[in-house]
Image (cartoon, rainbow, N blue to C red; front, side):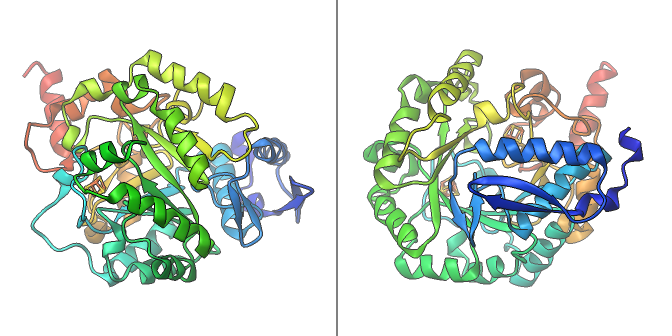
Length: 413
Ligand code: SF4
Ligand code: SF4
């Protein structure tokens, strides 16, 4: 049945928002299975909590372009192509536009990526961003380092055609003055996440090695709100943090300061945590988080932020691993990896172009199929990949070298 789908007909629709419901309006012939799929999908999205509105369209998460909006519709067309034509497009691309940063976090995931080499120029990034959107990305994510340390950040954001993709930023939150927030809005930024390492001010500042940062963030999230920017927190949970009940504390803090969304990442032993396996959530921790998210935070809780939980979203109960399936990560030098937490490089976008490296990544035997769980939290997967990386090796590590090591090991070498 899927082989008979006419891909050109998958664009023949618009989405309408009526009385809070997302509805499908066909504008031409569409394959019947695609219509049924879209109707079910829109009905599901309608039930999700609303994060906010952007250009009159409803957002359910900073990671998803809002609907109805052209970027949101493009995301739906890509989804249909993925389901019915088995295409692999990177819906999200995380671009580390600089590794400069005022903080010095004990867990920094990008620290080992830093090289004695200048980051890409404005023109190089603009070309890469355009290629990234062309290969199907509908969510361009600026990260670092601290992205606001780049003077051209507003120009880079503005270079994204907002009819095709939304823009999201991860920031340490220190530089969000009222003027900067206004400039981000003018540039077209959709939303931003401020990273928090603890709901306790002193612990946050200790982990970030940046005294006073927590208090600055609490002021600056107000600046974002006043400028009309959707802002939330990015947090991570280790086994110890989960045991200390940090998720609830973050949700209370988010409610208090008006955060719109919290993204909860599972701690992954990468970057400065490379090899520290004790930070991983245990399977029972992840199950507890999933149960809590579903039973509590996904219920009607006025005033609380929307919670997006990696423990749930990237689990076998939900969508599984996104790496090289519908997302990639790029270092400040153009090296492309499956995600921020997979320190394995498949090629350089400046030298080869985004499409060529994406193609290689998605055709690799270990990444060509869907993986039902987070690969970096799966011991068997780590044993074949990142566990082979020698200590102190420069990151991200080339996939060809890992492949050669695997082959040698398989041959009994
Ligand atoms: S703020 Fe981000 S980039 Fe800066 S040191 Fe911390 S984790 Fe690394
Ligand atoms: S390995 Fe997959 S699930 Fe895990 S952090 Fe990366 S993209 Fe997310």
